[in-house]
Length: 405
Image 1 (tube, helix red, strand yellow):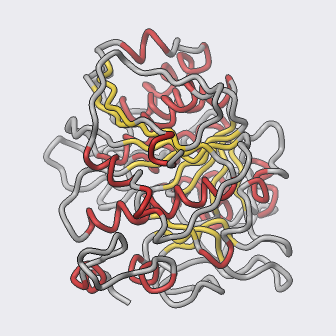
Image 2 (cartoon, rainbow, N blue to C red; image 1 turned 180 degrees about the vertical axis):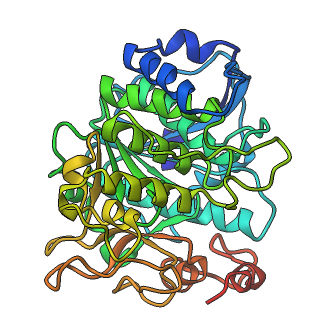
């Protein structure tokens, strides 16, 4: 049977109140929301449940898997393109027995050239899922007026509640692709040593980056997703990087039930910045400096680092104090999980232009499994580009030229 026929794509129209009814407000979530109110300058805490549209494709799921959706279903053109079997061959694909990991991703409708690249990068992730026997869950968010970044929380919540047989759900942004040099390495290589009390795993990149993250399946993982959603819905992350800033808020809160002055909210609906910054990452770094001054991080031994305090968290040095979070780093038997805008090589994680961290130790493996952006390198090294307009792997030169070397 063809791969494309083994999967069904549909659009689920989620009715008002679905999230409140389906995902009960856990006690810790209620306590967190109550405490967050005291630290927020946002006075309108009214939850705005809206009709949300999500396209989900389940690729090569086990036969006994339970697929749930609303009665209303319809085909989606973008999802159909992602699941195209002929296009999948352009990135190479194999098959393996089902594993207990699911890859969750999604893209929004965009015109070329980004719209073309989004589909091809999704094919890269799907091919990797097939190679390792991972379930592939694909979503297309509805533009409901919120920053689209928040839609990853919706997708992860849906995946967490409807696919409970998995041990891990691994989110990958639309502009993330798999490095073919390390595609034989499974995600369990980064997840097998995660302590049992850690339920969200991030790759070691700046700003608590959420381009790649893993959520442990189970009640605690679902609870953290609900808390993440609560921060976003409350308007506590109204500036860049939006969903990432919401998770920064959550991370700070779990240090000592305090956010150390972190405030990623606009002073007014028309304000262009938060605290004078376009991005809230500097504000998060400042909050972490306050936490470091309060003696939160044992690694610092009471002294502030020469670099940004956020580096202590993002490089994994603060892992002992980071529960329920964990930062997966490179080791002698695995490279970085994510490299940001590595544009020159598949074999090493370059420092620039993505400002990636150097290796933690000289004996750590160089390279990376997932590249965040660097679409031009993707087409040069990981996609069998054809110049024939009638070929399944045809990519217009204008798409490749759009991305800087």
